[in-house]
Length: 223
Ligand SMILES: [Zn+2]
Image (tube, rainbow, N blue to C red; front, side, top):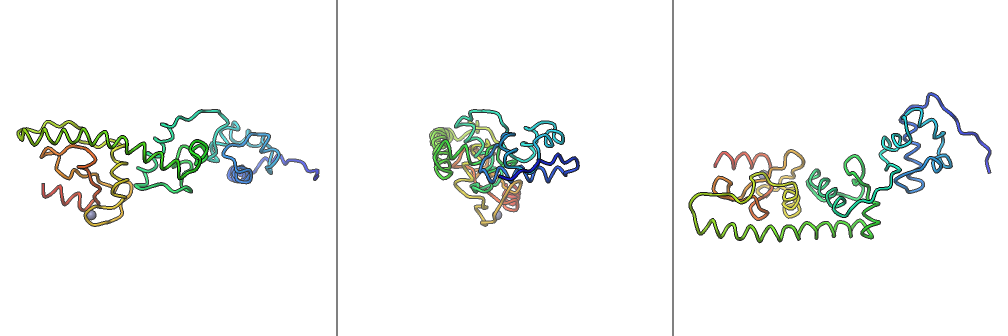
């Protein structure tokens, strides 16, 4: 037992405090830390945090840790968060990338709910593909109708692909231009109608592909 006093530092830089908070979280392998847990393991007094950040929760937030609020996250919320991160990266998120601010939740609630990170991803992919099957059914009947009438194109879908559809296209194509294989991310990902929208092409999984900016422009100019 060591007898030492907590230092009530007045001029400790914010970053140093946050770093120590993060270290304690890492040491305890926790995504949220209570004041007393910090007091036991940290270098500074929790009062110093309160003084510099306003509240304990604000310090946790700044450190990218979870707040001390009990919140039951639904499966849908967990999936929607994966969807958002996947879409942002343009590819499957890595375990190490799954943290704030990119991801709203850490991998921990996923591991708790699904058993492991891999199982969580599997559940997510299944969740997304069930949705895709339902859309494929709709798509089939839409094409049949178009082929049978061949007059004017009354679209059954909206021109802009939904966020969900974008993720499904990325899951199928990867984040590569389908024509040249160029790796695309963020703003450089273009979702192209294979059969042009102007020719009756619908915004469904089977008719959307990933293109790079160059090929998207080239295709637009041809049309
Ligand atoms: Zn390309």
